[in-house]
Length: 174
Image (cartoon, rainbow, N blue to C red):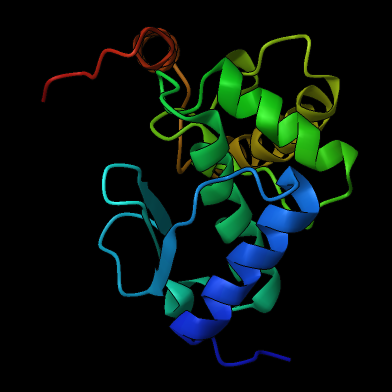
């Protein structure tokens, strides 16, 4: 069942999660539901605002997970790159507390080899990303079998280059 997600409800949930998972140590942020172009959620640390595209998410579970994901960015403070070691430490903390958060390729935008971005010391995150990679490998192998997609050396080199750039905090120029 999908419930209505008003800004008031999103802000109450932020307060609840802050208290439950961070013992109210996160700074207060304003949470708004809005249409976003290239993301499902975003965290603006300068203006202390979290924006979530509730309509694109579709389910309450995804809204909750996305809010927690953005709160991880708040907790990780000035982590660089955005999904760096501090981010994974906070995510590991949430997973250890059975928080309703999932790991997906949004944690490593721009490349499919998400497990490369997760520091080894975060075992729960490593396990979840390994599972995610197995699913991705199956999906890619189905594309290859159907002749829709071919993985060649150039594709692999580009993906590793993208991963290296992201980990170093450098963005690829178009």
